[in-house]
Length: 46
Image (tube, rainbow, N blue to C red; front, side, top):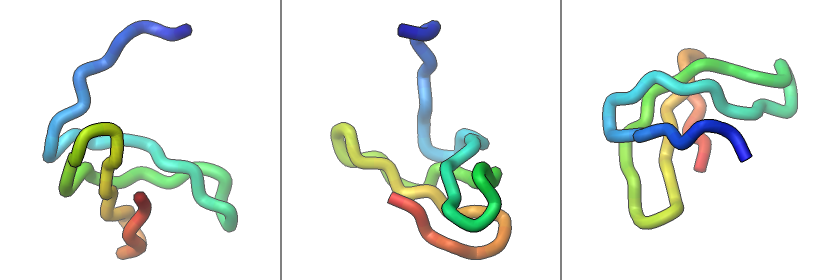
């Protein structure tokens, strides 16, 4: 296990992307353990 991190709406994060391996984005919604991220190329990742 890594170091605990506090992720909140507005946090800048890295998300897995099948085309480019990892892509940066911003957290838009958090519902329990489900997070919605808008990536810099405009994709929505859950």
